[in-house]
Length: 171
Image (cartoon, rainbow, N blue to C red; front, side, top):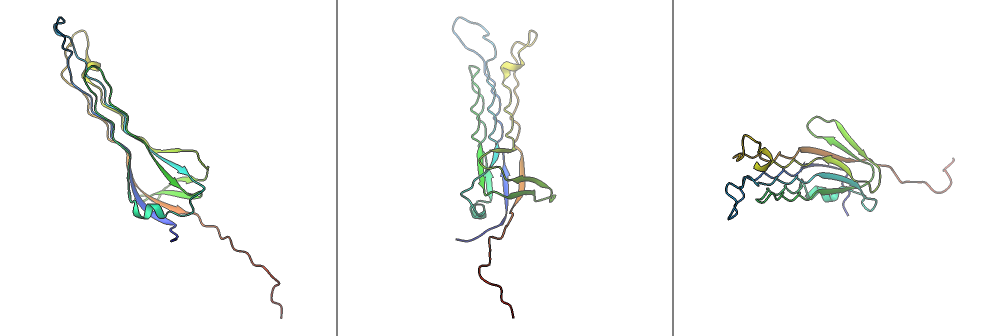
């Protein structure tokens, strides 16, 4: 097994889904009104400390980590599905640095507790949200907000587990 104590990875949270522009259509209801749903929220990036891991070898070959995007909104006021979040498992004692600025962002020591690192983008609003008494048929909606992205440097704090056994050599 190869020991890796420093890697550079790119992480990106999911983008929010766009809102929908839709109008209600039923047989005996004239000008039914807007019914476009909101887009789903993008997935977030979490770091989780795992005691079974001792090295950052997994991230040597997985340089790009991206959470899922939110689904777009649908007609009939149906909201889009929220994107799936991504949990990055790291060994205890991992330091997370922003690679561009060199700033220390996190020191991961608490075992099993997920730490929110990058939040996913908000979903856009559908045209049903823009209906007012004076504008009964709005024809606009919002696009989703892009998720956060960063280039990170992960470093593992090293502690030597070496001891000497026996008598010291005395001359």
